[in-house]
Length: 273
Image 1 (cartoon, rainbow, N blue to C red):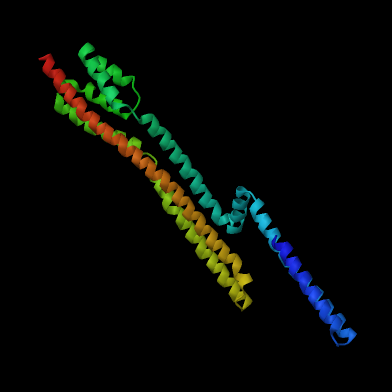
Image 2 (cartoon, rainbow, N blue to C red):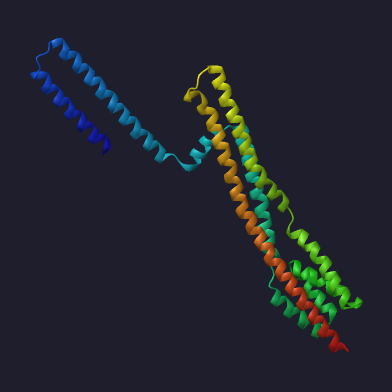
């Protein structure tokens, strides 16, 4: 539509110019020169319109992965590759933690009921069998506490606290690497920014003049690497916070369940006496 309107406008301009030339009193040679200039102007304007439409069409039809590939190349593989590596490794570790934590999640209420029933029916060994056949850190803590039941409630409590710290370490495994990738990704982007600015100033010094076309390459490297590093850091930060929330929920369940287990053991000892 824009192209059609522009062509009609230009056609009107030509008609008006032609009528003016007919009634003009200038010489024929002047009329011919003026007509040639108008035609050149029309051709240039139409070419500009065509180029703009083509650019818009190409921008709309280019797939997202192709645009990302172009930006990766424009940013410089030397600076974009480490950022992409941080994203891949960070996501791999984050997915591993998410899968591990999902398997580590346990229905503590159901486990407590099974342990209590096993204690009442078969004693400590039966309760240990229930914990041994149940997956998750809560069951492992229960097993360690039950295994030291002969030492008394105080020993059971200490063993639960100690082994709870061990399980916390297992839950938080590889989180330091994810936090490292979150911190280093923007740094790599800023490093590309500094290098891009140095390249831009070097080109200005060599040329001896500030020309936008000379510094555009360096500025593009600077901006793209910074954006890439920040995007990677934000993506990994979302997964990192989700993992921390998951660990916090598991730890709370562990603490509540451990207190309940001690209460169950106290009642069991009272019944045995």
